[in-house]
Image 1 (cartoon, rainbow, N blue to C red):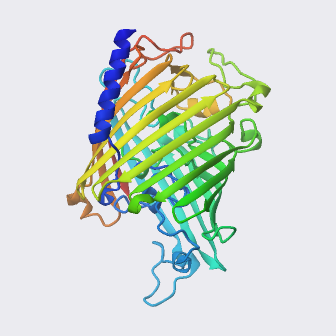
Image 2 (cartoon, rainbow, N blue to C red):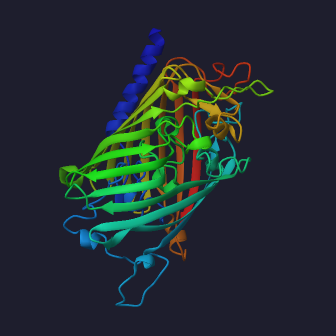
Image 3 (cartoon, one colour):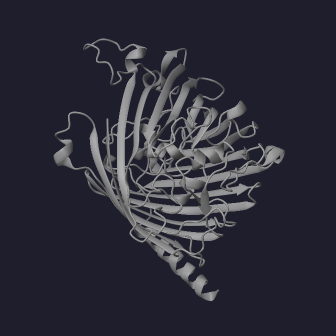
Length: 497
């Protein structure tokens, strides 16, 4: 008992010390890499890596990164028709609305090295779960239009985006093509929403998004450009919504403060037969933007509602069970909370802290963690990134390895699914890497930009469990006969325009 406590204190001290100097956070640094963000689903599309989308310029809410929201003082300029990348009007010609259309494509592939695994998996990872295997993670394509004036203070825009690759296994939305492919490489629609600016109630108006959107909580997003590392932290992988279908409103209370409200169908589900219990869920929170002379961005956001599946539990011939809870799922609540602060020390250095919490009545589990990020741009083409995280799964019911190609979709849709998990564990994680833009390649590219991100990572159990590098079985899915740490290294490459 004493030995485990001392080990945990030592690891916490190391994470805190490096958090103040090394791991403090991430990166806007001179457009070299992307700071941790919760995605602004109204704007985040696969723009070129050399010029990250506006929504990726601050810590994560639908209005982060805005100097002046559309509809205020300079609203006429903010919402004027602008030329997109699909059209090139003649000089002097006023662009029409439809000439603002944009299209973007990005391609990401990578490999993780873990010589010590006996399971072939990197435990507690979604997108980078396959050890010692090169994968095509994502090909993402989008067509979008920024919110643009349509008269009398109103603005209108949209985003449509889809993904193909190994990452799509963990980013389905039930009822939207889910389960149509069954191998390592699948496809998923990731965004399909209409965006509007409404000059209502508040001086600075309201921004509304309707449709399928990325979740707005956590520090690391699904697109390669929306995160500083190839691998993810525990919180962004496991305890925040990935995709939601519904309505999200951002009310601009002041120049620096927004109020966020949303109603949706839940994490990665839609409605009717493709829903989990058809009870409403939703967001409530606030965001503070451009404080302290524009250096500080913060948000505090909650997501609430019953998230379990109200179907009956089903057992497969092999003995695996589905996640059905019956009628009780309609009233068993799930509570999510997320706080994030990003401080831009200067043009080269950024520090972020992200705290995330989940309580699930159905699982009788509390899960929470704190991640600290640091980024320093040595050159426009080279940035150092570091991350430290402490993460606790109180009952061992959330952190799991979805071990088949379709396990996660089957879990969501109340079908039996193979998996293995860990006992109640306190996880520690340290990751160090660089973002490298090879100029000798990018100068020769006619289109887009190329980026390489090597990293080294250590995961460790801080309370004496042994969940890593060993697989479970249907008879014993809780693994405690592996190792107490996982040392591995990864690298991905992304090209985007």
